Length: 66
Image 1 (cartoon, rainbow, N blue to C red):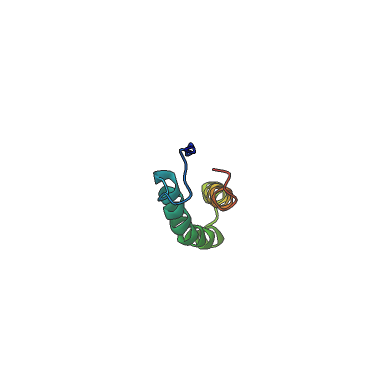
Image 2 (image 1 turned 90 degrees about the horizontal axis):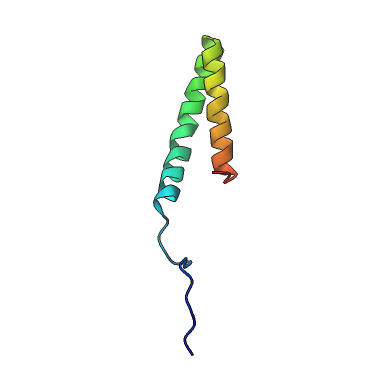
């Protein structure tokens, strides 16, 4: 008797979302460092909000919330 195979196999290549997620993680680290230095040197409300948004996005990507 043949077994029904599931649509998602463990040996498939990662989908487009996993590639985008990996690229975002690699891009966000230097951007967060640069934004942190910029916020420390020239603080403004926009810089602080942008830094917080990038840190939350990075944390959510690392915790796989997205």
